[in-house]
Length: 429
Image 1 (cartoon, rainbow, N blue to C red):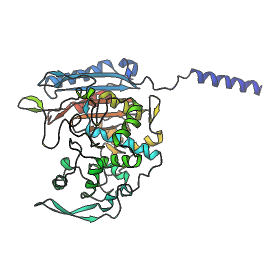
Image 2: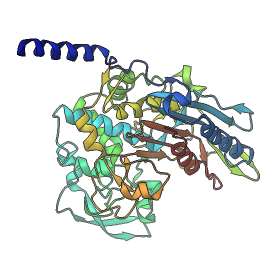
Image 3: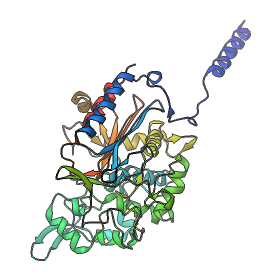
């Protein structure tokens, strides 16, 4: 009797195993009807109407929106004009300067090397880039000539500090403290975008000579730390940073349209940046940097904090890898346990009382964020970019939202918060 019972249980177990669907991600991010993925078609229609109205009201010139659930794309739509003066419409496969959305990709590269045992997160960055052994905290600043003095660090900047913006390093032209903007400008620090023949090996040692805002680990200051980590990847891997990303991340994930500098056959898909002036959307330019850096100039600086350009679909592939706990399309980039580390609160109470914690280069919704509303469920991770791009992904709901624009000084634009709030309100299961 025991033998027969054992055989019956074994047969049942094997039968059950055969009935389980094969685990594969080969068909992820294909289009699917919204209702089949627990999304309301009517409520997605509200998002469509909101974005069309924003274009009609001239709040934005246009955008590309992508929503995916359960690894299926339920909405991918282009709106408005990518180049208003020329009358060129947005296309779904347009390429955008994603700026600070680069940071999550750099953090991924760092953690891939961390998984290989190349370093520990609390290693001093000066162990790999010796110039940081002399970095100090700003003590005095001379307005007359932008000179400064520093005090020595009691404890060094670590790799973890750089990933979490707690190193004390500033961010040049977008720094909140004008003293740091002036000091960076005088030293010729490249903040992110350049057409000059500069490399990470040129820029990062100069950055190490800049003063810090505060002691490492004692404050949160948005910084060029991810540029430093791009250089770390070069040093540790022995590969130029752009090649590391291409061979280790972009090619495996099928991100064929993600580059620091676009090949000629993709250059015409780069969206111009526009700004609102005198009642019209106009091409944006600035003396601070060459706005067309992805397709012009020396193309030698690989800014790990802000240099990449990409499409909505490519970035969705990257986010889906995280929702799949480190794997996409049969390619595993990270372990599930590593993803959990990256999404854990890494900065303690430095953002105390807010709707989000901060992980390793991601904002992560906490319980306060759930009560706040419109942010997503626990663990929803997000960030955005300088040229008005944004993303969020909710692991619990298996939901991705991406809204790509290319604007500056778009003061009346409310599409970002509306899009996110309305995406979560479109869940219907």
